[in-house]
Structure formats: C-alpha cells, structure tokens
Image 1 (spheres, helix red, strand yellow):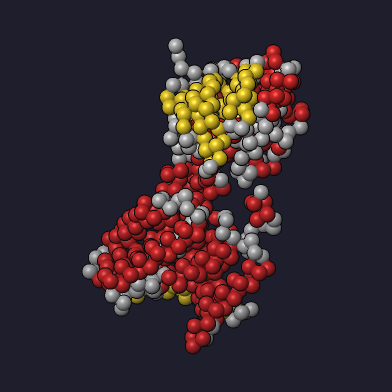
Image 2 (cartoon, chains in turn blue, red):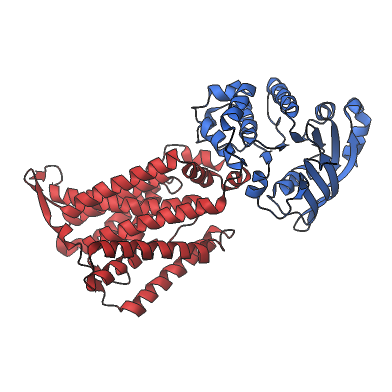
Length: 237
Length: 303
C-alpha cells in the first residue's frame, strides 16, 4: 500500500488560548480533489498554514508521501513538493509576471523540465503568458489569481493547497479557475481546496469535509451537492 | 574656472560627486539589509571603522597597499557575518525597535573595543594618500580620489543592479524585501537571502572604508560615525523602503554635504550638519514618503 500524497492526522493548532483546529484527520490521494469548507473561523486557513509549516501545530501529524513534515520550515515543506496558493493571491505586484513565475521555481526539487512545466502552465493560463513582461500589479484580480496558481504549479508540486481561490472573482473567472483545477487533477496532483463556495465545492470535489469550530462535522460526496439541509446543519453545528 | 551660478569651483563639484558616490554605497549597504531584515543597522559605520583600522594597522607596519586592502575586506566581512550570526539572526523574529536598539549596542561595543585596543588618539592610514593628489583635466585640478570614488561607486552600483536584476539570488532578495513570508512559502531560502544581503552589505562597507581613509587618514574610534548618521538621514530622505530611492538619497546628502563644505567659509564649517539636517526636515515635511519615491507609492504599499 502506498502512502497518500497528503495525510493529516489528529491535527491540533492553537493560537494562544484559542484552539483553531482540533483532532482533524483526512487524506488527499494523487489525482484527488478534497474540499475543506465551513464558516469563517472554522479553522480552514489554520489547517493549510499548519500543513505548510507557516504555523507549528500543537499536536498531530502531517505527512507528505508518508514522510512527516511537522516542525519543518515553510521553505523546506515547499521543497518537499507542497505548493500553496495563498489567500489574497500574494503575488509580487512590483515584479513582472515572469519574475513571479521564476520565484515559483524556488520550490522545485529538480531543475530538469523547467521549460516543459512553464509551457504547460502557459497553455493552461494563456493570459499569464501574454502578460509575462508586465508588472504583476497591473493585472486584474482574475489574472492575478491565475498567476498565483501558475506560480504554484511551476514548482512541480505533488500536493497543491489553495486558500479561497475564488474569493472576489467574477463568476466567469471562477469557472475558469475551477476548470483549471480539474485539468490539474488530471495530471495526478493531490489538491486540497479551501473554499467559501460550499455547494460548488461539494459538487466539484471528490469529497468535501465540513469544518466548524476547528472540528470536522461532516464529509460529503458530490452526490450530496443538492442536500442543502445537511450542509446548513453542519455549518450551524 | 567656476560654475557661474553658485560660485562653486569645479574641484569642489568633483569632490562633492565623489563624496556622494561613497555615501551612495553606504546607503545601499544599509538599504539592502533593511530591505531583507527590516533592520536599520546603526552599527554599519563601525564596520567601516573596523575596516579603516585594518588599513591603518597595515599602513603603520609598512605593509603593501594591496595587503592592507585585503586585510580591510577580511576584517569587515568577518565582522559582518559575525554580527549576523550573533545579533541579527537570533533577533529576527523580534520587533524592528528591538533590533534597532541591538544595533546601537553593537555600535557602541565596537567603538569601545576600538578605544581599548587602539586608544583615543587614532592611527594614521597613509598608504593611499597619493590618491589625494590632483590630476589636471582641461585646466581643472581634480583630486584622484574624487575620480576613483565616482568610478568605483558607479561600478559597484552597476554590478549590484545586474546581480539583483539578473540572478536568481537577486530575484529572491528582491522578493524577500517585498514580502518575506510569501517568499518563504514559495521555497525561497531565507537564510541564504539574508546571508547574501549581509555579505554584499559588508563588501560595500569595506569599499567605503578604503575610500574614506583616503579622505580622512586619521582613524579614530568614531571614524565614519558622522558619515553614517548623514547617510541614514539621506536614506530616510530618499525613501527607506526602496533601494534606488535610498541610494539616491545617500548620494544627494553626500553631494550636498560636499558642496556646502566647499561653499561655507572654513570658520563656519561646524554649521554644515545643521544646514543639512534642516534641509532633511524640510524635505520630509513636504514629502513624508521620501524625495525619490513616486506619488502614491507609500499608500500602495500599506495595502
């Protein structure tokens, strides 16, 4: 049996006296999209930050391909094949689009195949290629989101974490982002998607975990996307 | 021959450009470390001072100039890396105020060590004194050091621009200066970026030490202290947050300092800093974001 690309086990994250995440366990396999949904403050972003090493979990384990990454710095976790598309995109506005992509290369484990990966990313997001000599700050919000995903992909990750990629985007652009994610899944990446758009995420992901007050309340498959009652009650739990 | 408008002769102008170039290098050295660590290194002048003592040490023993310069670079670089290891890195997570006060402590510590080891009277670094002699260019006498400082300053800045603009570590440094956290999340090696900034900053301090000892051969424990304060004012004047404005600010204050020094009668030269700082205050009242930043740039950064 091979280890899943990402395994979170009994994770606990505390910020001072506040427990943001408690006893959270789930797995994301290769070629899977797993959604994390829930109301504000449910612990979704804290989970991503703990996986990435940006905050140190107070308990539990995070394993990438079977190897624990707890206690490692974010730069090391990135180099183990985990890429994050952060909330608010966090692109470098004053650098060119191409320079932003080159920064993404920092997380690569190998320098081989850079040109191919760049090509694939440009094919996936033609807008990024067209704008590559422009300052990233001049791009629209939707274009910046595509750049942020592209920047994560050129690191050639095995696990892709996305923190609310559809936030503040026009519906047409949201469609584009979700289409791109479906495409990325086809390449065998493990995708963990934190989203506010609950129903869409449930319908789109292989399974979606509903978080509330730091704990997992419910796991839904795409067939439950219409089951609004279950969602609502889990949100209110 | 004089520049008609201000009654300043060409020689003063050349000296002012030379001093501006030296200050610009110091500004880059301070600005690089500030960019990456958000740390105003008040002890930067003491790095220059240590380098100057190395030169004087070699000069008093009659060692060749090249040996003195190598010793100067070795001492300054070793001290920079030591400072980084012992002070900057352990305090990296602390607030900028803590780090600033720590650099004050380092500055006074180094100054006291110099006082204990070399005494208050100072040492003479004479090996490069020939650079103070003038060359005549189309009828104007210009000190060699003014030319050397200008050319060397421009060359250092050019190399730095290429390094920051064209290399991977340069890109990583620029990104870390803009948003360190995100850079780390992308896999940028924080330690390497900081190390590179400290190293380059140290190299520049060594270059500055060599050139300042030509201007001021008497090396005392407070060597380069006044220059550092002026450069810090210049960096704030230009715009602390960015390297190019900070460098221009450093150049501007050096240039102004050189011009005023030449224009003021000798018996009134003690008022030079007063004039300079008054000008700095005036500029900052009118343009709080800095002289060389674009309008609105500051507002954008806070988003």
